[in-house]
Image (cartoon, rainbow, N blue to C red; front, side):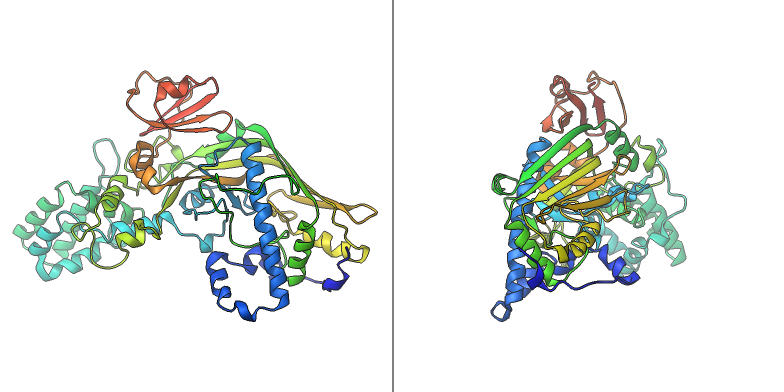
Length: 513
């Protein structure tokens, strides 16, 4: 089938257009369900061209579901947790690039296009929640300070007013109760409080108040929200990773994702190509996917990297020494378990907006599936006309499904060759040394807050340890060498597996090999 009727335009990219190409055309064409819902309002006015684009979207949704099943089967992943991450994203050289994935709250979809500007941040959502909770001492302190209480709250919530250096406990870690007391005394002296009021306020703030402590922790992070898995953890796990492969045949691979945790296929709308937005390419995608498409992927290294928000416990990870722990699982659990005005202030966010059926904190990321040394080969029985092949080659160079690796970026190189009949083989490769995120492990907020690993995601680098010091009743997560995750497992049961790699729970990690 020729592309002549599509009138594919010749394109000369400006620098601005080249930069825009880094935001894949599939995202510019459709920004997820919200955008589709808005477009649906004008459905009756859609043109035939838009209808053709809809067919493209449906075709790509099916192909994505097939790719999801191919990856789950080929890499032996758990479909009750795994979510594809659709993007061309190589990790950078700092931990920030790793933390961004842990911070992105997953939508209910087996596949999610990762675009930082359109994801909900766990750290920011968590901060909004705990800052809308009622501190346990607030009533007494409010009575003590009267009309000065609002000024005190404003002062305490500003990171610029944190004591420098932060007060430390006997173990050398930040003492967040003392941080708040120090803030109060400084503020009180600045505002002329008498000695009795200063002492009474100090006594109140020294009481155990998990909400106040959590708020102080979050403020003390000063916008730097670290997670317990760093770039060093990614590199270490990838170095120990194993080779895996995944294959897709559009005529035989199942697109049924009803057995997955999400039960729905794709979040967002995209095309085969990552670089352009003309409707002609949507039509090309529809034509291509109507023919047989085969995708074969090999990964020289596949690794699982577990982690979570930097909590109150001390971490042995050297990459965290310059960061303040900001997450308090007990405070968040208090918020979840108390849908009332005793724990929640009046105003937003409310309990329903957070934990309700349509709340914005339904799921969290508990781990990353990372691959390195990637080769993707796509073949198709679709025939491209001779006069259109140069443009098609140009589009393949800008990245294509399922990794969208742009030529020359992140180690990617793309090549397409045409047979005499116009059918083609496209190959995209990224050599070892450029680890890419393939997907994430998703955990419900209920499970995260009900297990120790959900409250204290600490992970040490102990190697060759045993379970002698770990009580049998302590439950954690067991990671096997084939990528299988065994939740809610005690340490001896984990290490009894011949291929067990790591048991993680409540601040402890034990390497079983």
